[in-house]
Image (cartoon, rainbow, N blue to C red; front, side, top):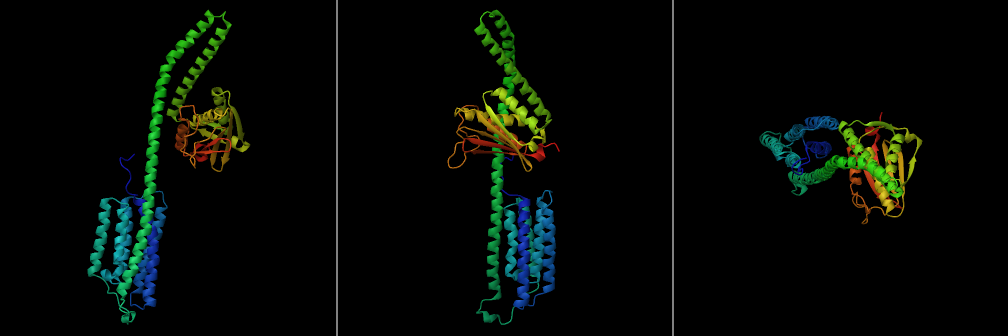
Length: 424
């Protein structure tokens, strides 16, 4: 992560903005040249001006193709785009009065846009380029011819009119495109904030995982001791039927704890190896429900899954099974708070997505007009990390976790792209 929030939007966004600005420039320059030559009857060199606008159009097509490619856009390439725009504008100004042309201030537009997106060194380079162009046009240019009978306009000279048009164009361009740049900047800042929040959440999950690994290691010794002593206690109290039954139950619970610890270790090894299981959807869902029923035998799970979805083969990544079991466990806890054990699981294929929807009959998520932050359900028990773990798994698989309220409770939908998890 960067050590400070991003303060500029980068070369690619500026290059896209310049592409749109270039299209506007081509249209505006074409109209201006034709109006001056045909309507105002100014003696400007029409052919060289149209050639310059045509070259800019050709470069605009190339720039649009370049921006559609997946290659990154470095700063030097953005500066080269600005250089082409500046050279073409300087070429057009050379044939239309040079520095005396009221549109000479359009050389400042690339500098203003660069200041919002590029480094200081790049801004200085763009400023130097614009300054050199201005100095050249100040001494070398073709004088702009004046229209005949200019006094008939009541003293409102062509230069003053051009300054007014230039002011309007500059205001519109700077207002619109800097607003686009600011919008992109706000979006980048929001993305940085989301990344920071994810990093903090993952940090918490890593801390929990570390504590869980330590606890699993430490619990193995007392569980082994209990597993050794319980059969002896059962033999010593074989005549006490009630105590023997309790000891048998306790022995079963100890074995269950040892099994859970072994599964934790096996899951950790699988996570490190990053080797996914290859199962179809029906097998995967069945294994999840079997594990969940062992953990929550009192829960009444209803499964909805169509035949086509059940045969889809998945490369089940480590953690997906635990994410679904966490969602089922949360739903069972929420339903239990309303004296209900009903949990519904719907599995369907929605285009290129596999959708796992878990519904409960609990009080739903806390709402204040709209759905509250993910994870803030009204469930009273649990550690409160089930949804966070499921969301982390969804993001790792390029999916999403959507939570909402239904008529009878809450619904959490885990959507995963089949392009990532399907075995094609």
